[in-house]
Length: 247
Image (tube, rainbow, N blue to C red):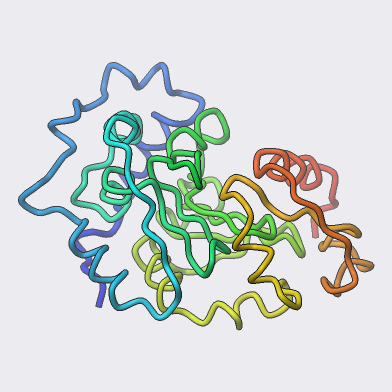
């Protein structure tokens, strides 16, 4: 089903890590200009649109701002031949299942973060590609999470562990569009979640107390919740991970 020529290879992912991560300034002189990144003859966008059309889950393609898209693509240094490059250049991002999952593109008023902008300064060993309404983060491994470079991990809010999904970026997109999200999130959804999630910004997440990764927070329906920025939640997760003992 998936076109293997559109999947990320290891060398490209390492380049992305250098550009967006801590070595950004070092890699600037190696960056490709916009015209080298746009591939109109073999664009990945028609393929992405085909996936969207056949999606089983509700998906909203956020309108693109051309100026922002050009800037984001140059920062990302991925061609539009890839699904990731196509999404960044042709959309503000994708909202899946009433906005429960937010796949990052070049930014939009509903999801202001661009893929390269959100990652800049965060990590040189992985790429944050999407997140969800409960503060879970989907991460493309650049070598810092294990030997399976180019595979997606899920930083789950109910255990704060990097869980390997054994999927490439394209396979992750396919899962978001056609997979059983109710099953995947069986312990992380509460009654009437759809109403609350549909009203929230793509730059917000629900913060729960007791924390979902504690023994007291195992039943999400018994936890209190409030909206906070995704930036704040990401910072909290990183701080808690440093404090938690290794298994």
